[in-house]
Length: 358
Image (cartoon, rainbow, N blue to C red):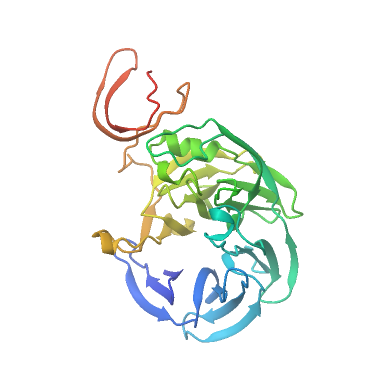
């Protein structure tokens, strides 16, 4: 019935009635909270305390959300960005990001030290840490060319940059890899707990976003759709992975019954810039935290969105180009009519070159 989110300070929301959430106050954690996971009534908070890009630091802190008291802390030696607790609460996995200096290396490769994955016993010692490796990508758009979707480029050995992590079960965990010009992979991957890779999305997640008219073309040269956070949950006996694309403002929903061959089942429209998510299967709920603050441009503030699991007509109909011979991108469809033999004719108000005839 309670939702906790990191918002400098930590925010608490009563969702007894998910259609009318109520604020329950904040917890001042004395720094920049970047991620939070709940273990009973204890909030495990990733804290960024970095002095600079070249001197990253951070810790994991524990707070009682009822009394708002600090319980314990563990130094991570790096900048945390996402946390995940095993179902039995025995240990915690943390991705450390170590943000790059955008001005270093002429805007390309950042500076050392790089981020890594940390595994902690419950608020205690580091059990292990591991590199998440690299991936070869083809049919990607890595050039910031406004108004053009040209998924014809390739990059070999693109370093993964994990920005989100969740356990699928006791033997497997998944990471979301944000993109950068010289790293990131712009997808997501699944590993065994012994660090062996068993699945890599490659270009498929971004391709699905293009087909669903949510691809952020202006970000092609840096981060692309930017898979940011994720959540794993089981609804009606089916385990799902929810992959958040921050720059595309959409959530990919994958059936991960077979961890080696996830199946994309749905694209959820999100709030602006989703970064964190939590599922509550017992109540049929899924919640996202969206960090874009557009108030200076006359838009909405950073916000939380609550979804309900149901068998019903979508409130947000989507036109999808999956199955076409090539990727088709558009921004606005202002008119559409059905013809014969399953052909749909559309007026494309805002399109991205090259325009491909059907």
